[in-house]
Length: 473
Image 1 (cartoon, rainbow, N blue to C red):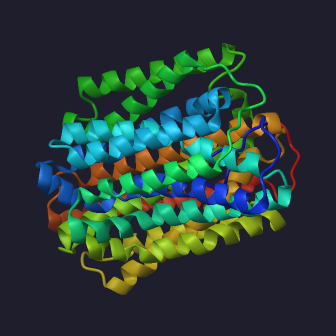
Image 2: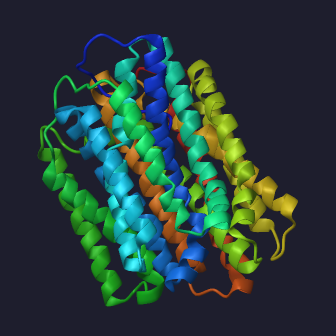
């Protein structure tokens, strides 16, 4: 697992390590795919108003365009990693690139909201084959621990940049070519990546391929999809309506069945025994909180600036530049602090900056000045940058290698779940609200961002003090 969204494999089976130049080329190729995944998680946000006008969709329908991608990605991350260990990482990686590119073209050509949402879900399938597999390829290519640590630091910076830079890139593309360009851009990038993978990336497999947990996979997907679905549709159908109550019951049943299935399997999709370890459980919840806060911030920013203040997509995307800058600078810095001092101090910094950014937005009036907005986005970006490395360290610290990969995979899934929940919450707050009332309607969302930051203080307390904890579950 990286300080971002992927997992470090417990073991690999491959030939001799490639030369130094080839190893760093492998990192560059795999980081390119990670950049694509991160950008596509957030690039669509800034284009939602334009997509809504083009396809005649409201806020609630547009939420599905974002969450169809993140929910599917979250559901399939662990299974895709197991498939790669069994059938070959390069093979699955290339398959993921092809699926991602074809789905991107389908998104660009989609004539209706329903088809766009379906294509986004297929994009999530392709992305799930890239995110956990790419870092496994990198780790296999870099056996030296110091070199591997440097590679993971670069990886963290790339992902932090991609998530925060998505709105900036999206705004630029939409201003120049229209909203469909945010999907067309993926095709040439994937074409280049496929050529580079064929030339530079070696094949590798896990030392012992895990069995696929199909019942667990289906139950996890059902629980996530219904949970996010009721968050999105709750304002429309009514939180206490029969349909909503049926959804609550379905989520409870799927979650209970998932727990029973996983506890009985020798090779479960998610090892629930890890949650008996307080640092791990708190890190997973912290990952959900951090990415929920980021998603809430990006979506509320997009809707407020474009719908309420009349900004163009380019201007709205440019407003998030401070967020991208804070995340990019602080991600590698956080990794260094975590390695030297342990996860507690970076987590305290992450919580403090995130909470401060949320509080700034809560206290702003209906027509805040641009400097105040940019300062709040910078604070949230710094908090996001500081959070990822210590959360990963807290989740996997003290675990043997055979369990660290599983722990990282669960944390990776939690991040995507947080993204999906954040989009659903922000959309629920903004759905049906008049443009001049959006600033007031968004305040609970900014309070949620503040609460997510404060929660990281609790995660810091559970994380331990030093860089080399050896507690076990």
